[in-house]
Length: 258
Length: 163
Ligand SMILES: [Zn+2]
Image (tube, rainbow over all chains, first blue to last red; front, top):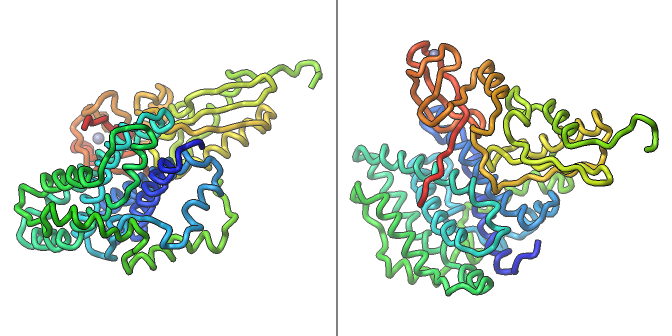
């Protein structure tokens, strides 16, 4: 509804990230958590993320079927979903904790960029989302703290960090920030400074437990030039995710809720 | 439309009908839950209802929208209804009416008057602990009462944290 194409692209990329993150948290809610309360928490966070995706897409189109088309009619290579958003192992709690922690920190850096955009229409979606994301980050931090309390937990978190940390570069490997800033006549926002801010916050969250980040900041900045998910080059597991996400829509493309 | 006794529907009429529309997850009307942000009646009798979800991921938006439209059609014979969801405002437990608090309490859900003052809906004790920030719907969280040993839910209150 009257957004600059760059802003539209920004909202769609963001919505698809949230959609995939929310979907994956919801797929096997009951398998993840060590206890019932945690299963409920994971289910709630999943709903929040799907809600954020819906809210962003509703800025672009009110009609339900039009929203569906944004999500369900793109071939995989046109879904510029961050690799970090799609990273998934079926039953690995520490992997999910690290993925969620990293994603939510990166998402906060994106959110901070977003709240500075001078556009009244965008203001309508930030209040609730900001509060909900605060709760998510604190939730995952609690789990980082709990799992870090013994050697086995630390070993598992380090293993997950080794695999997932480099994906933070891909998260910011898009020129959409620069284009959006240009569209609003703002000072250029380069992706390496966003990435830098994100890495600093991640390190602070893991610092108390002496984890080793697998790559130095300069190596991470270099990775910005090799986008994966952000360029539509997905992880192997994305095939499965894509098929899963489309299964209902493909059977009943005209179905509506309510 | 010129029949004697047929008067223009007013905002008060609409609100009265909405008082009878129940939230799909709890026995409380959407008015008492505090999610009705505004009601407007246009010159031609078209009704516009603005609603605010308790949480962004509320799965019941479409269901509530349909209930509102059906109720207005059935009770006031208004067919031209637009329901708009707004996400910008900040729903919080303060928006729940006194009547709504009573309804929730008798359903076993606490509504705390202020943060940290949760009262057990069964025995009114304040000797309670929060077990989880997440409950069986997005707007609730789980507590445990150390006195009567009952688990219960409380309406969830999110505090805005400045970055
Ligand atoms: Zn009690």
